Length: 108
Image (cartoon, rainbow, N blue to C red):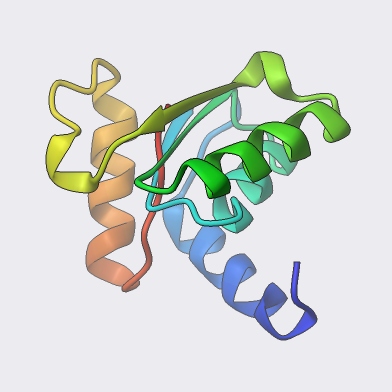
């Protein structure tokens, strides 16, 4: 992670009110900065979503390297294609985060 973005990631995660074990959709995940931070903080599962196969591959490799693959899913889709997220708390938390911080999350 770029050193200059560490404080941004921490601020976003602080405002997400993520409880241990919850599922987090990281829509527009990019390199997974938010999703991997959520896993570090105890998220049960992160769904990484992006329209870039290259970025999703990057996140898959990072998850393997960090030993958290079993807690991750990867979806090639834009935000408008993600409908019917089963976990209501994940939807609520990502909505809350989006209104408090202009940051994307992603899903798999």
